[in-house]
Image (cartoon, rainbow, N blue to C red; front, top):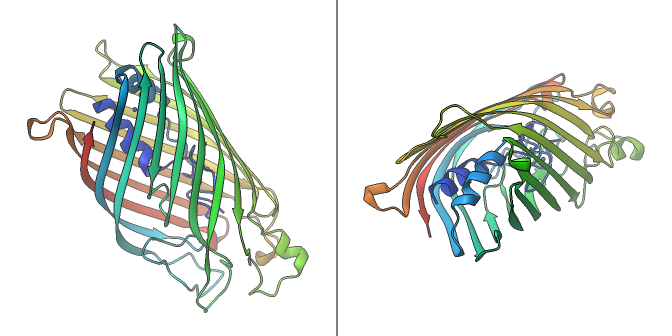
Length: 369
């Protein structure tokens, strides 16, 4: 399963702000958080936050040689999911297959960053971007890639991606302490911003995900054939397209509508999905303040019925609202900034057991080299 914002990662929203100050997957195994260019384990490829136009602006501002951004902060979250393990060790047991998951809350450290090197006079920049908060669940991610400015054609990027999230090996086990495992993914992300010097941008992501010791359905006594329908190993694809509309002559205000499509071709057909939707994002870039907001709405369709629920499908409607505020030039120091961000997401499924929601607020400091 996966969250609709697995193409979305909390890190992406903050990184766009860091880079302006200087830069497609819900978490694995859960229906609500699934879209992300870093990795598509169900959360990492669910909600594609359309940042390609912002990345193009950032690329123009990057200097040659070494540069980097680093952020340190804290996040307070409330998570409800029957499939993901939360950073505070999650909720190890579930009571009923007919009820929505109970919510849990906690606080977790936030560490993000990107380091890059630009080659003088070439428009080429290599980058590495590690993260310990690439999803709303416990886990992490890494991108290693290159960005290239093209004469009168925008900028393209390519990156190898790796990520992992902690999930329950048998999410359908009831009234027992569930065992957790790591859903790992590795793949490739491609992007083209300001295509042919137009406001259009597009990106594509692919990731192969793997969960060792899959146990879905064992506690319910399913046959081996039905257990096979619940396997979460497989391939994830994400595509997004966006148009950045400048609202003023200075380019401080940008409105970006976009389209989202994601597909999970997993070994278990009851876990394979098609996800599609729309997103509207707004960004403000000022002398001392940056602000971002985005709203994504998606529909998720499952390929086959779930044998745990008598063949019913877990189709859902998903939504994610994200807000971010950055104070640049903190205390008069150009390299320092402070940020405040928030996320609210909900997945409403035809099966209550698949319902999920996330509420999160993060605050911290950033430093730009």
